[in-house]
View 1: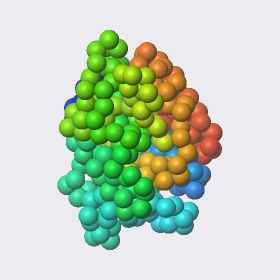
View 2 (view 1 turned 135 degrees about the vertical axis):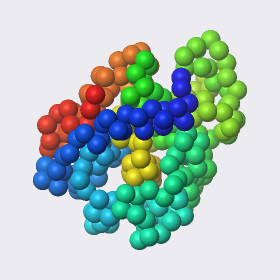
View 3 (view 1 turned 120 degrees about the vertical axis):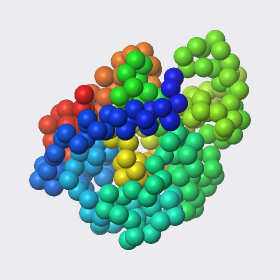
Length: 256
């Protein structure tokens, strides 16, 4: 399983041949308000859209979202949104899930979420296809865990926050005790999280879902399909649900 840093390099390569090839006049084809209700799985709509970060931030404020893009830039990156360039770049592109989690925890702490330091962003690339990644935002009560390797279930792993394998969801530890509680999950193409503006949206949308405190146990079923090689089934099901919610044709969120 490749570390997220490697995924970011691939993401930057794919983004050159991905989002930039798709010009979608989103303002005319879908409801931003409805997409905000969908959660982080709607991120491809923003990645493929012509809406600026400033416009999206305004829509989030109008929707009375707990966390807006401007708050993410201020809490996570320490930048005043009014000073951020239109492309959203501040030189703080995330290189791995440990760094992503640090930014994520800053947002949760800034919103007075209890035990904010125990929420983690995790990721798993699709088997044999690094173009797609399954993400989750989980609550994990421990910073030191003993679990079985996802790829080799007979192998025991002892992990801390310094290990990249720590930033993978684990339903239970080696003793069979429940471990992670998933509060948000979503599957993305690499061209939807390569740029900082996309990553800022990911952090914003995922933080809003965690703040709702509604567990997503359906993640574990999706993960089993994902790891078994049926990742396209997961992506297609997500695409259908999102497209139905926002009123666009199925297939909009999946770019091969």
